[in-house]
Amino acid sequence: MTNEAGAGPVGLWLGDRRRTPGLTLHSHGGTSFRFDPGALCLELLLTGGPGWLARFEVLHEPADLARWAVLSRLPDGLDLTVDEDELAAARTVRDALHVIAADRAHGRTPDPARLAQVSAAAAVPPLGVRFTPDGGRAWAPGATGGQLLSTVARDAVELFGGPHGDRVRECATDNCALLFVDTSRPGRRRWCSMERCGNRHKVRTHRARPADPNAGT
Image (tube, rainbow, N blue to C red):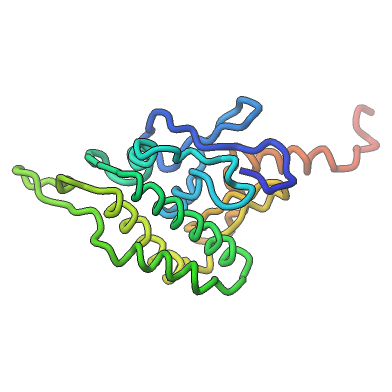
């Protein structure tokens, strides 16, 4: 995704899941790259958003939210049922999270009304887990869209209200509005992806260097 005036917007591809963290984003130019925002709640932001972000909407029907859950950083094996009301609630909470995340990234005080929307979703019981017969971990049967949304909302409360809340960033490229949490030890992550914006910055920096007058002599 880019900002409203930016070129080359990208959108979430609801395709095959990979084992590496993050999701595959596709640009209108046909290129794709992996983007790991660092948290489950920030992965939901890649499905669309309020205002100009509506152009990236991919949650058109309940099955789309279930598909996003499969692609997300949640462990495999979730058998999820989503209805229309739960889909609408997910879009509402996602839009609130967009505003909260952008506010944190730019040092603004979050809107209490948006925080209340996320808190209400977090108050619902989250996805359940259980032991398998051999002592492993599995999702409890009968998972609902409301439970999924609660799990996402609780992740948001932990992120924005926890020690990494001040490490939520927006990509440093002028025309990219992707949001992520910088979990690196030095806390110096600037780009959504080195594969995309990081490499573009390197190219621009290299081209902007003055030519060496002694080159070729």
